[in-house]
Length: 249
Image (cartoon, rainbow, N blue to C red; front, side, top):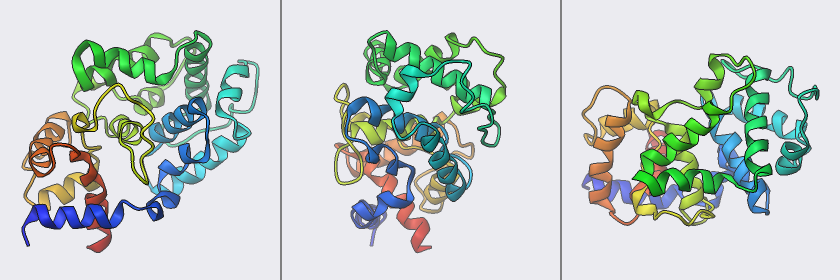
């Protein structure tokens, strides 16, 4: 069996509703209104690093603090509120989370939303600028004395980061299907980039479809050359194959 056939079989096997409950995509799936889905997905994606069971537990705590009403919580949040003062996760402290909430508040109170924020950069210069424009927006709105944890949650594409979590967010919201939500329409799924983390990189190298040693944006671009040959219309479906390979091996 060649690599493409094997990857196709894995992708089909693991892209099922059973994938959702143990993945951070469970959080946007909890909501029905677009704004709640966007905000839940954004917050879930930026915290999705480290041990899966640990960050999912932390996200459950965060959404409990938000009374499971993301948009309402953000619109009505005030700096004097204490709900998030003691909320931290690895590199990020309460003040980092509060600043992100305040930036989201500014965005949604202005009448805009996360889709429009990502679309603005995309219209300028494609998917990488989509990420850059969003990150630049969150950097430009900093008012509180944030820590390095703020920047870890929102890595800068200019520094050649693989931007795994932001690419994962785009996968969730641009692709449709039984797992991904497909609520953003400004770009086609054929343009998506693989969310490259240590696991995906290791699997890709073991399969002989990635040679670059660094897990950076250039590695993402190299890997996508092969994945687009496998399926030019939906290359990021192989994210599920990478997951499945890890399960099977």
